[in-house]
Length: 101
Image (tube, rainbow, N blue to C red; front, top):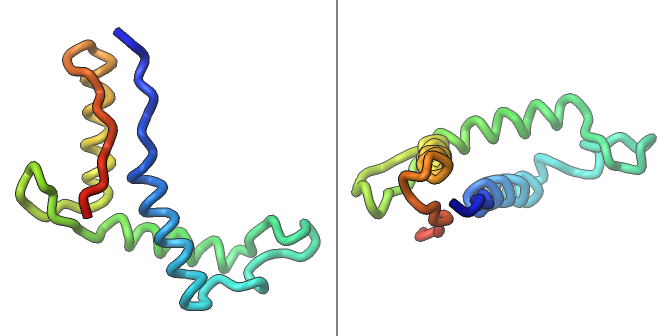
């Protein structure tokens, strides 16, 4: 059994879209970062905003092409975890997630 490398496309897609959305709506700005650490550290308010928006985003749904029903991003991540478990148990070869939307 070959060791599976997790496919992070789903996580990257959700997180990148969230970050760019917050930037485009000016919810995250230069003032959201501390100047003392060369703008590499988020202030508490900005961190709370990102966590809150990520929680909301994970509840959003998309139509799953194989299941034929609406599923949340959180459920999609769970499905990917199940696929990795099956791979590690030797039941099925892991196939990486492919974005279809």
